[in-house]
Structure formats: structure tokens, C-alpha cells
Length: 431
Image (cartoon, rainbow, N blue to C red; front, side, top):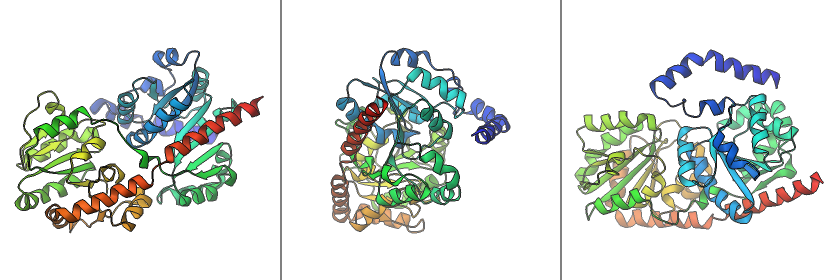
């Protein structure tokens, strides 16, 4: 661990000029800096004082969304627990505060032993719950030293990361052996965890929490947009797009409008620091652009053919409900794709590019049921237009996707049961 900590420190020191530049120009890494460096926020101190705390860490937006229903059901099952939520990214932080306003939310401290110890002394957690693949060596070691049981939930090992884990499995094995429980999304992930070094008797398959993503009410922004759309609007929701994909979408848009004049695009870039650049790109292409941040303050009709830029945080998942068709980004470039379940749960037909290894298992299930269309960049515009034109076929695809989503539900309940059982086992073993 001394070598790991030294390398981490060296990376911070050598990268300091770049970090300082990014903070000065975008503010992206400025938020929560003091807390990351070990100054525990006063609000967090006061919130957890005298409470039985469960610490849940969710790195960014996707993990926060998956964790939200789990946290709500954990709180209902164990009302004496105060769940404190940490995130790594500013977007994750914003979404966690929005979705879980009653709970303390803070930034994950840097993985130095002395920094982690400060947080553990304040939180005194009953349990640490890590979402998906967040494995921090010093956090794991310091929790072990003070007897905090740890669980990795919704665990996944991607195609890209598995070879790296395998090359370093001699280093990972001693760390994984300190974790009390692994709740994997699939049998494949469970097998990979065991190969990397997780004890087989601590690995279970509970399913993917993202199949349980449900909101009981429509978001205010979605309701406002619905009211302002033309009566015959065909909405194409393009979610979580990355640099390079907007150009492809905008290049395809004139052909879409020629075939479907009532089409409206909702365009949601993945990263907030690109909102302004994407807005400028839309304007330069000669398209009418409405920005959600401005629309929210001054609603106006959303004209056919226009592009509604979703430059807000936390609204995309609900916005998919408006779609006649959804494109899930990060897939037309080599980025591994994003979650196709978000539109599938609304019965919206889903289109993705050929890069989807981050969600390969989910895409495979949808493909087996003919509930998703995977397309090359070259065929993207033609396929998008055809799916909008053949409404009956597209609607049937969307309904199949919704059935897949509903059939896979239940992971949250199984995870809650496993975590509460782990808590009871830890109490018994501590006596």
C-alpha cells in the first residue's frame, strides 16, 4: 500500500498543472475539493452525529440512479439507518442531492489512508456499500482495520477492465478477500470476480439494479415539454451523447425531417461542460435550438423540426418517456455505450451504435427478444428514418423491450435482503 499511495501522490503532484488549469477554465474539479482532501464538511458532521450510518458510494450519474431505489428500500427496511451517499463526479453529486434530498451527500475523499481515516472517524459506518466496480485499496484496508463490513453491489466487471484485473490479480486478491459480500449483476460477472480473486462463497448473483429503475411521478420538466409539443410530434430522444456523435445526429436530421416533418429531437450530451459547445454546433447547422435551462424558466412552444437541448442534470431518464424513438449514445464512437434500459422501460424503441460493451449483457438480452436495433454509423440515418416511418413495427419493438425490462426486475429486493443479512451477521460476529 505504501507503493500505491506513493504512486497516487506522484500522479496528483505531476498532474497538478493540468488539474489547476481544468479548475480555472471549467470549474469541473473545483467542487468539493476541500472535502476530497480530508476536510470533512460541517454539514456531514452534524448530519451523522449520534446516528447509525451506512455509507453508500456511487461514482456518477448511472450509479446514483441505480442506487436511488436501493437506498429508498434500505431506508424503509431499516429506518434506524442513516444512509450517507458519496459520489466522485459533480454530476453524480447534483443528481444524488436532487433525488435524495433528505440524506447527507458528499464527495468521496481521495484514497490516502490518513484522509480515509478522517471520514471513518466521523461516519463510524455500520457498513460500506460500493456500487458496481468502485474498489479503492486504502478505503478497503482502512475499513478492514476498524471492522467495517463491505459489500460491492450491482457488481460488474466490463470486457475492457477484466484483462487488466487479471494481469494484476496477485495484487487484487488480498484486497478482494477483505470484502464481505459481492452481489453481481450476472453469472458472467460472478465468474470473473472469482477468477480475479474474490472468495467464491462471498459471491452471489442478485441481478441488475438498473432493471428496477422506476419513478412514481413525471418530472416537472417533462410535463412542461409535453404541454408545449405539437399535437402530432414524433420525438427522437438522443441521450448521453459524446463528442463526435452530435455531428452524426445533426448530419442525419435533415433526412429525418424530409421523411417526418413533425419530428423533434431531444439532445442530451453526457457531460455538462459540453452543453455550450453543442448548442453552438446546433445553431451553426442552421437548426432551431431550445435550451432546457432557459425553457424551464420561460416555457414556449417546441416547434416541429427543432432541437431541444437537454442542458440540465437528472432529467434524461424521464425525458425518454416522450420518445417515439430513442438513440442511446456513447455507441456510435468507441466508448462502450450507455444504458438502453432507460428508454426500454417506457416501451420506447431503442437504437444504438455498435459500441456497447459496457452494457453488453443488457444489449444481448434485448437482442434475443428483438427489442433493440444495433446499427453502424453508415446506416444510422437510414435506420433512424425507417424506424420513425414504420410506426407499427417500432411500437412492437418498444413493447418487447418493456416486457424484457419488467421480467428482469427484482434485483433491488434481493440486494436489500442480502445487505440486511450481512448487517446482522456482522453484529453477531462482533459480540
